[in-house]
Structures are given as structure tokens and as C-alpha cells.
Amino acid sequence: MCGIAGTYRWPDGKLVTDRLTETLAHRGPDGEGRYGHSVGDGEVHLGHRRLAIIDLSETGAQPMVSDGLALTYNGELYNAPELRAELAAAGVRFHGTSDTEVLLEAWRRWGTDCLPRLRGMFAFGIFDERTGELVLVRDQLGIKPLFLLRRGEGLVFASELKALAAATGGSLEVDPAALVASLLYYWVPDSRCAFREAEKLPPGSWLRCRPDGRVERGRYWNLRDVAHEARDSEPPDLAAIVEESTRRHLLSDVPVATFLSGGLDSSYLTALAARHQPGISAYTIGFRAEDAKFEAMPDDLRYARQVAERFGVDLHEIEIAPNVLDLLPHMTYHLDEPIGDPAAINTFLICSAAREAGVKVMLSGMGADELFAGYRKHLANLLALRYQRVPRPLRRGVSRAVDRLPVATSRRGYRSVRFAKRFLSFADLPEETAFRRSYTMYDQDELLALIDPDLAGTVEDVLTEHADTYQDNDLDDFVNRMCLGDARMFLPGLNLTYTDRSSMAASTEVRVPYVDVEVVKAAFAVPGERKIVGRQGKAVLKEAAGSILPREIVYRPKGLFSAPLRAWMSRDLAPLVREVVNDGELVRSGFLRRDALLRLVAEDAAGQRDHSKHLWHVLTLEYWYRDATSGSGQRTRSTA
View 1 (cartoon, rainbow, N blue to C red):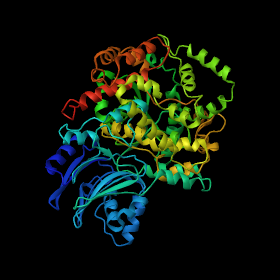
View 2: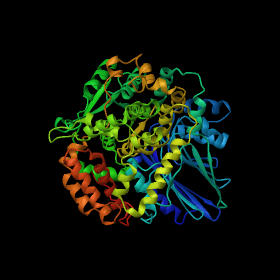
View 3: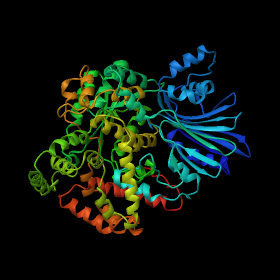
View 4: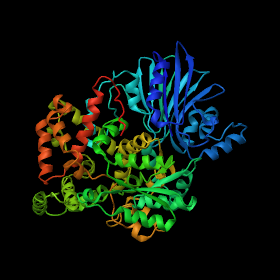
């Protein structure tokens, strides 16, 4: 994994590319490179920061230039051995063992027709000296990021948005619609970008710049179409497909480890990885007892230890007790856009510990919940359809009774009450609206009460876009419609984004074997009724994992890859919350309303509502906004 950047017919392109590449140094501490060439009346410049994973020698260095093609590439191709063999049989002579060279030669032979054949995670820019064309490409599922910005006939691109901000001297303007979307979801969806002008290249697509100023776009893979086609396929051998994907994801010339929470997804991957790489290392986290009591979390460490002992895994345990006042601005910088998920901190701390031990590559169970209906919201939305059959007067009584219950006291939190209140916030809504509400932070009225009234039209636009994405499918059953919605919005917009930025902040590559094109096809070939059986989510994956994992792990209570926010809010972050609510930049600018924030704080302090996530996200948004509007375009990085 690496950092890529470049300019095409951009003023001072060499200088700008240098800035872009330097900003991405954390993504590739093992080396750097530059490339430049004339194009029409301008120039193209490519930059690269290298995290050496495959072919550690100089033959794997980038930008890679060969016979008129120049490539800057971020990612891994897990079917590179097969592609290499096919190309070699056709007469291609390779100089090294990197997948970068395989990609370059595949492009030379097949052009954009090679893209559907690639199995992996990737974003790259490739320049053809003969035609003067630059093509940018992003992987099928949006695992790897690629930001770009166009002005006139010029273009600049990079792996991270902060690089574009730095390269343009802080001239980018904040997009209020992206901030509204961030408040609603917890993240900025792939369809939007926190700065005006900038954009994210959509998953499964490419963009071609021509010397005459024309720009052409294309899509080579569409998750919606793949899901539609997969539903008519034969039931897959899911266990075989997941094991094959895991085996491929172990391909590396440096040590590989796993995340191991003790939950189903990470335990299954770790067990499979240990089958192919005996003695593999794994990393897990735990909370301090005084913090965990606020969350009433399952004892994840107990399960992780059990898996490690059973499969001969070298387990490393990390206690989460960070200085959150230092980590908050550090993570806000690295996350690029306002993202409110504290799991980013966990990922960063785990990857940092692994990096200190010499591990550069880690496997994560990310994606299984989205593809196989493993979140509580999936089951809750099915239960909501049954709940609506209960007579309305009885439902009103239940709602009033639950509303009076506290979600926390000064001594501990009540997770079941919190879940019940969350469930009742959407249980009476129609199917589609309920699902969308089940993972947004506010309903429409709550959001309108929180922000500048002049943004009411923007709220409507964001909600409409969300509804359009959900409705844009041909799937027959509700469960798979939810899974497709998650895989198109939630997975690339939040989970893959914070995983990439948090891991790369620690100069570590995270691979996601469940987010693999073959696993995705298998997932949508499974009917929804096999994903949720009774009250069991991910039933089909549990069935597959049962061949290798003990029943206690497969059917254990679901944990949360999160952080003890209530403890942090009541102790470490309480003064900062008061400062931001009373005199923060977002309040002074008029974007957020002080009275609405004070109401959130009061309800949370009284234990009547759990607004810890909402307030955490306000803090992340505040730090991001301060930097974005400071005029510098780039914060000096914290040394946290």
C-alpha cells in the first residue's frame, strides 16, 4: 500500500506534485519517486510514496516507467500470479516480482479491458507518453481512495484529500452539503466531498484526460448490476470462497498479522489464516474496567484468547487507554473528512502497535456485516415489520414506558435500554425509511433543529440522495436490499475510509478478505432468508465458519468495535465539549445552533438519552472545520 499523487496540465505541476507527495509521506515511508513528461502545451507529473510489501527491491519502485508507460499505483493485486503467468506465456518478460509490473503490463496488453480482471484493492494513475493520455482508476468496491480536482484543462489527484488542500494552498472551500451529510450519517458519502471542486473517483470507474482538454469517464464494474446478476446464481460454497480469498490476501514479502476481536468475522479469518500460515500473529484490544462499565460490553478478550490458543496464534493484547485530547486532533487530521466513528482510534492504535513489532500488513474482518446482514440494524428492521402488527395503543404505551427509562447512571450504562430507544425511533416507519433512519444520527426534524435554518434545502437534497441510492436496485428481498444499500454507501463511505486512513497513519496496510469481488458475488447469491434466520444475523456465514470454529465463538454475543465514549465524555472530554458547544467555530459561524447542542448535552448528562456519539462527532467536525477554514489548507500534524 502506498500514496499516489500527480498533476496533468496543471500550473507549476512539478512543485505541486512535490507538495502532494510530501503530504502523503505517512502512507509510504520506505521510498519515494517522481516522474515528469511533456503533454501538449503542458506537463504531466506523477509522485509516489512507497510502503514496500511485494518485491522489496528497487525493481518494485515507483512511479514505474516502461516503454512509454508510467504508472503510480496504490494497492495489492491478489490474482497477480495468474495474470503474470498469462502475460509471460504471451511473451512478456518481467524484470521483478512486483504486482506493479504485472498491472503495467496488463494495461499495455489490454488497456481498460484489464480492469474487470483485476482482483484486489487499488487506485492508480497511468500515463501513456505516445498518446499523452492520463487514466485514473479505482477498485471495484472503493477499498482504496482516489481524490481529484479539475480546474480548466488541468487536473490534480492524490490518495488523500489533505494532499489536494495542501497543494492548492488552502484555496478550497468547504461544502456545507458535505457537512450536513456528515452530521446525518457520521461520515461524508462517496458521492460528496468535504471541499467544493474536489471529488472522489467512484468505485469501479475510470477517468481519462486527453491532451486536447477532453475528459472521458467510464465504469467497468457496478455493484448494483453484480448483485442483480448474482441472485440468479447457484448457491455458493461460501466456506471455500472465503478461505480462498483469505489465502490470497496472505500474499506478501513481509510479515502479515490479523485483527482479532474474538467476534465471528475476525475469528474466522484468523483461523483460516493460521491454517495457511501457522503461528501467525494477531492483535486485539480491551478497555479499562472503569471505562468498559459505561458500555456493558461483552468480554471480547476472553473469546480472542480462546481462538488464539485453539489455532496456535501469537496474540498481542492492547489496552485502550489513550490520551484522547491528543488523539482527537491527530485522528481528525488523518481521516481527511469529518468522520465521527471512534473505531478509527482503535484501528490506529492496533496498527501502531503492530508496526512497532515490525508488522506491515494486517487482515481485517471488515465487510462481513454489510454483506451478510450482521448488524443489529438488519435484524431490528425485520423485527420492526413484525412490531408494526402490534395494536397501535399498545405500541404507544411501550414507547412511553421505554422513553422514561435512563440509558445511564453515574456508575454504569444500560446498553439494552439504549438499543430499545434506538429501535423505537424507527420501528413505526415504512420499510425503506426505517432502514435509512436506523443508521442515521438524526431524523429530519432533529437535524433541521441543529443547523442553520438556511440549510433546510440542503437537508432535503441529502435525504433525497440517500433515498434514491436505496431505491436503485432490482433485488427481491428486504434483507439483500439492506445489504446492497450498506455495500454501496456505508462500507465505502465509512468503514473502508476510516480503515484506510487510520492504518496508513501508522504506515500499515490493512487488507479486507470479505470485501473481495468473488466473496461479494457469493454474498448476493445467498437469499436474505439464509442471512437472517430467526434472530441470528449472518446465519449463512456462521454455518460456513462452524466447520472450523467452536460453537461458542460462532454464536457468541455480538461485540462492538468501538470505544468507551460515555466514559471519555464524562471525564477526559467534558471541558472540550463545553468549549465547543459554547464558543466553537461551528457555533460562531452559525452552522450549528448553540441551543440545540446545549439540549443534547443536558439530555446526555441526565442519562435520559445517549448522545455520546453525537457529541463526539461534533468534536471531530469542529476540529476538522477549524483546520479547513484556517486558510492554511493543512494542519501541522500532531505528534500524538
